Image (cartoon, rainbow, N blue to C red; front, top):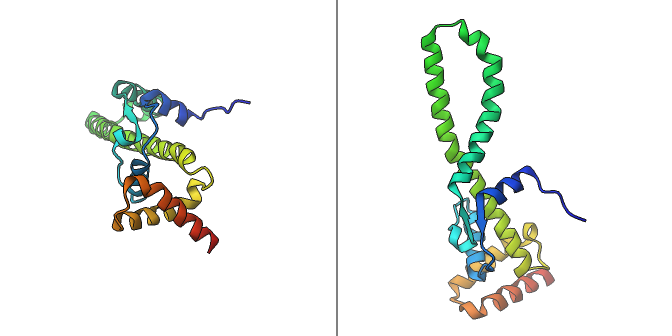
Length: 168
């Protein structure tokens, strides 16, 4: 049985290139920490890259879906008012459209970051659901950094600590 993709997932698949390489544990933990703090994560660490031309096409499509019906509704009232007001309105709308692309790109980047973290999390920690354990494992990771745990012992350290906390 196949799961239908949402429009958002189709857009993400269209505007981003995803690496087939697995995400390193330390990169996953660092990305999770940064994402939880509301920061942008380095796309290279999570294995994705934006196809800018495709992002522009999707954004133009979204803008047209909004503007065409809106202009059809407001055309008649705006045709009867002073042209100076229409010119100012066009300037404001143009500015909003150009600023909106940055918000669109930022939102899509947050979505793909979350998707990549959850996908990699399911591979690294299959018995610890992301939504339930991401904060706990972040705390353990921060303790591991302070304790200067080596890269090769990091996974064992985290798993030992999460099991220990779960049993408490």
